[in-house]
Length: 229
Ligand SMILES: C[S@@+](CC[C@H](N)C(=O)[O-])C[C@H]1O[C@@H](n2cnc3c(N)ncnc32)[C@H](O)[C@@H]1O
Image (cartoon, rainbow, N blue to C red; front, side):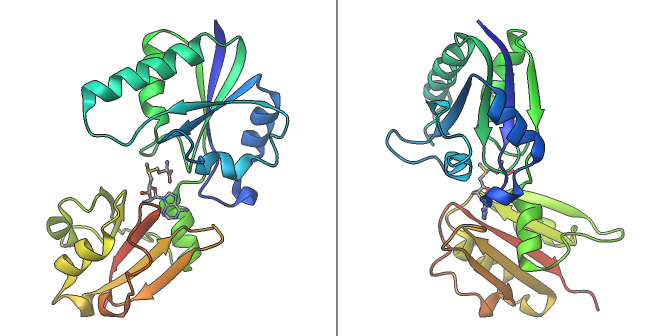
């Protein structure tokens, strides 16, 4: 049975943003588990670390992107059994940070329920990394921040928060245009698509200045900032 599981965040995509601790753990574990959303589809988290984990034992865990909770449970359980039945210490890697909307969360819950020791090795989460890429502060002073997966309730929260992060959607253009139409003068929009990857796309401006053509895919996020006057 597994002795300990490290949930390791590998950051947003730039290998140099991997922490020293992540590096140390990845080098010492017996096996590294890599989440994939489809069989045969390369794992982005693995892409970040593949050069530095060369020669290590790697195993994929399938977490399909489906909404059906009952079907998903079968995949979580299968992944859990495979991790549990591995000898020694292992790592499960995840893009960004394991505590932020991570596939690791599901496995983490099952490991804890079964009293298997887990240690989290934090990685740089995409919202803060992308604010850096845009060269803007995410929040400062007494400003308030909210993260909205799929942009849910965006209109409601625009009035309440100074900075809004919209992530986990392929439809940034549609969501942001619908809500920010007519409010263009009051908000600055930052878009980071595939941040830190070779084909990254970074834009900052008013909503009508943003070209959403190449950013409507899953590895994109938006940072919306209220303009102070
Ligand atoms: C399932 S969440 C995982 C978040 C991750 N655990 C983190 O800490 O960043 C996936 C979402 O993170 C955002 N994301 C992750 N990496 C990104 C990157 N390099 N550039 C832009 N957005 C990114 C996208 O909004 C994507 O839909």
